[in-house]
Structures are given as structure tokens and as C-alpha cells.
Image 1 (tube, protein in one colour):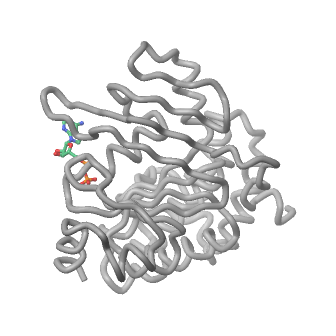
Image 2 (cartoon, rainbow, N blue to C red):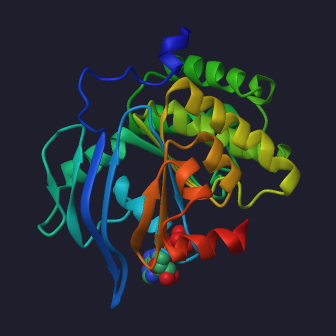
Length: 262
Ligand code: ADP
């Protein structure tokens, strides 16, 4: 198994964003949760989404990979055709979005009745049609990288919460995505287990994976993100490099949020 096969996709020759979102809106009934979000995600970039609970971070993340269908706005994936959510979105376009990305959830969502190796290979084999031997070789290499090769035949219940979440990350990597989406991957963990998961995420960022991360771990965002977006009430109130946004926020709302959480 070569390193390249389990590493991030090579950067493209252009500066076309991997993902370009404009004016994304999403309502649940009368409640407008996203109120016009613009976002560019370039290859190799790590973007952190921060903000109070209920501000729309998860909904935005899920909108980027087709788990939620925005009510309006447009998305372009890698300079491809514009997906306009104000019109009916063809299934093929929705699935195209999903195929390019992989999500790591707050609760790892591993199948309890499958072993670690089966959990990691299920998606590539069943959904993406990767031959089983190839999926297993890739999964084994990825498990080695996060220090869990010896757990490949264990069941999720036999692992610690941190180990389970590392398997969740490997499962996402096993899909061979261009974009990794993390939805508060450490918030369900005991404090002493948070570090090992953030450590893996930091390594992935350093390797050049493209990542969008919803997180309350501001020190992680500060150390790892290229850009931080502060959301409140479904609007991006401030965005910028972490050193600017964290040390010298322009907006009063950002300041208040940071005071509360830091
Ligand atoms: P955050 O991730 O910032 O905590 P969310 O995106 O999870 O925010 O939620 C934003 C708002 O949207 C919340 O008020 C939440 O209750 C609401 N919401 C999220 N998902 C749904 C849903 N499937 N149906 C109805 N309301 C939802």
C-alpha cells in the first residue's frame, strides 16, 4: 500500500475552489436556519466553523455534502456545473456532492455488529464498488496510521470513545474523499480522550487534507485552521485568519462569543 493511495488527493492545477457556495439558505418550516452563506473551500484548506449552539453550523456542514438540501443558493464543486437549489436539484448532482466528501459525526455512528475493519470497508465496497481486497488493504494502512491496526478485528464496544472516533475518521478516509467534513467530532468524548482525536485531525491537516470542521475546540481552530467563520443566527458575522479573528475580532458579537467560551 503506497502512502499516496491513502493520502489526500493531489492539489489540482488551478485555483478553482473545490467547493464554492453562494447565498445558501435553509429553512425548516418557518424557521430560516441559514440566511445566505457564502463559502469557498480551496484544496488543502482547513476551515473551522464556530458559533453558539443553534447558529446553523451543522446545517451548513450537512448542506455542503447533500445531507441537507438548501432552500436556495448555489454550489459548485470543483468548477463543475452550478447546482441551483432554487430549482429542483437532479439526484445525480446531489449524489455527486456526497461522493466527493465524507463526514465524521459527533457520535461516531459505527455499526455495533461489525468489526472495525468491516466498519471501515463497508462504505467503499457497498457504496463505491471498490473490490473488497483493495478496500481492506487501504483500511489496514489507514488503521495503522492512527495506531489502531491491532484493533481491526475488534468490535466498537471493545474500544474507548477516542478509539471509536479515530475509527470514524478512518472510515471517512476510506471513502477516498476530496473533502473531509467534521461535525463536532470531540464534543461527545470525555475530556481526556479529546487530545488523541484532535491529534489525528491535526496530522491530516498537515498532510494537506481539505477539511471543514465544526468545533468548540477554539485552541484547535486557532492552531490548525486557515480560515475561521463565526456564525450566529444563520449568518456569517465574521471570517478571517485565526490569529486575526481570535486576537482582534472586528465584530462585537464575535467578541462576546469568544469571551463566553474562552
Ligand atoms: P449548530 O450546529 O450551530 O448548533 P444546527 O445547524 O444544528 O446549529 O441547528 C440550527 C437550528 O436549526 C436549530 O434551531 C435547530 O433546532 C434547527 N434544526 C436543525 N435541524 C433541524 C431539522 N431537521 N428540523 C427542524 N429544525 C432543525
